[in-house]
Image (cartoon, rainbow, N blue to C red; front, side, top):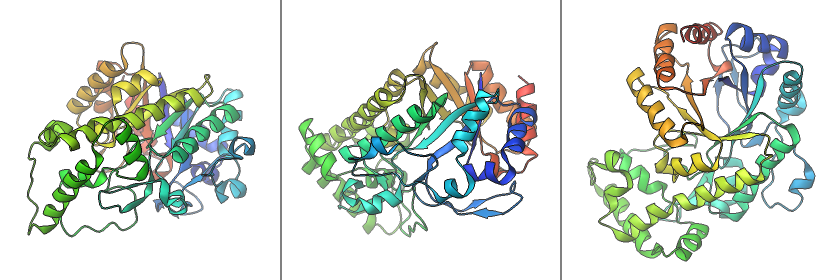
Length: 393
């Protein structure tokens, strides 16, 4: 059973590696650390840190030392965070600690969500039906973006040999995620956000066109629906059953439906390229939500290609956790890896007993791993919630 906690390099640097490892293994009872090796910007409240209470990481940087020979001819290049030079290579430190008997190491790797790179390479980002660039989202159809992600994974797995690598955002990102101070006075519905998330960049136009998708007709349909939504006085659903039916809600618009069926192709093929690029000694898992289809993810295909799935059980009741675990087990099969992720944020998680009931629900179905979010973002006493929950099972 893999029992891990998500964390950032600055968390470890602030408390010190020895104290961090004691917290993880002795206090929380965990046997793995999921360290962010590629990450985006934000403002992070730091209740655990003895040196700060807020941290603003650089946008779109990596927290490891790249091998320059792998990147010599790549158009999209990684940028090493100043944090690494100032505070040390925490991925290397964790791997050394592992060799000395410490916890296993998982490289938590954000793939296509990268505003810094999107601003530098606007021709490689997703674009709406109106050709508006989503700077925070590199496109999985872009050859340059695909090269960036596969090289990133190759670099980390061959250079550091983590036990596991967790893929976050190797897919089409949603319109309502990822940028600073997003403004929406219209009141976008889920169907509107989904339509605004569909990509019509030059790479998708070409790739989908070769697959027989009528992209001009699909674009015209999406533009029309969004234009209508923008003219309404108040939001009104065109597809009230969208949340239940997903892409099948658009069957009455053949070109659009063809595009939606095709969207999983660039994502699935990228996952296959990632698995091929990775060192075979490192297990590769996808971190995602059950609603991953909205980003073009075919979870069944991902489970076949990769070594497993790590599904986020955030804000889910014990009954919903059980349902998610059953769904995940059906996807990965009896021998595939299935992990569930829990967020220790209050009031989403109210205490030790609350976490215990949700963990018990997962164990009743049968899971192979648990991840907890996030070491540096919650008070130290919430590590005791983890230990208590694990003792209960």
